[in-house]
Image 1 (cartoon, rainbow, N blue to C red):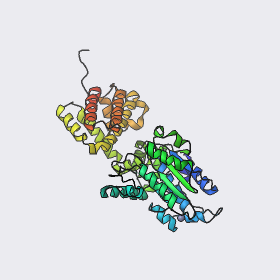
Image 2: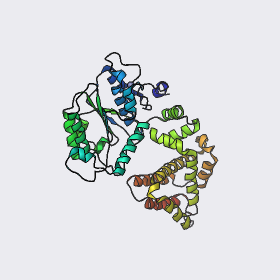
Image 3: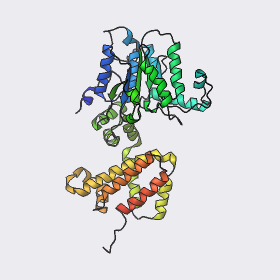
Image 4: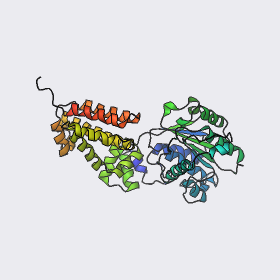
Length: 397
Ligand SMILES: [Zn+2]
């Protein structure tokens, strides 16, 4: 059992952050000892809790119980009960700003305040919805259509607010989600703030793409890394927080790749049923029927299904990996041999190059991430999978 499990039964501090016990302790120690840096940079893959930690830390600092003075920090931060917590829970606290990549406003008038108002109604609605979803679920991604960078306009508005608001004591917290999406102009404007930080302002930057971050930004932040969550922690938390049944929780945790967001998605998607779909697809490829193949390509070529396609590939990969293990050592994996569908498929594809099949699936997943047309990815993958796993090998040899 890992430490996370031993302590997560009492999730009182930073209640939205799942697991990440060490990170939680680092942050809480800073709060309790009042040794908060000017800027934190939370690094790690998607869905492991960087933004949940940032928002919980913001809530803790802005919580009125925390403010009553040194040494009287309550046992639990944020308290969740005070008027300030009520505001931060809705992400509506005047001293909490959350910045994330937005689409460029339609026009630019040169007036900072007006620029910020220049999004269309539809865009503004999307922005509000993304924030509302985030307030409800700290793991909800802050994405809006066309939002590819954090804009200079957003930094200017922030700077203006720092200038205008008369400071009434306590902290002001700025969360910058996906800080790697600060491009040159906005990054330079932001750097000025970071170099001469206003009093009692904490910047909380998050990023899953460390290589895209400007060195000048990295060097001014205290870095805290968030690793992928272990499977046992994910299982335990799915059961504890979401009331997921043990077996589904375990299956979801295995597929989640260390991400809480993914674990939840799998738990909601019913991994066993999804796996059945993936296996059914493989079976339908067996005969190499061109009509069937075209039908499958057609089915998976819709851009709207690309996320679902990505999940399907993940499952296909897992299935073939299990087949490969069973094929290589039939007596060494009793838990796999128990699965009659898996055993049958292994027998059927005995001696085939499963490693190459896995590579093909991985390549397809990467292509999808690189926005290669799903129809093209599907066609290429299905044809080659059929060749690798099912096509009759040359009988003249
Ligand atoms: Zn509070």
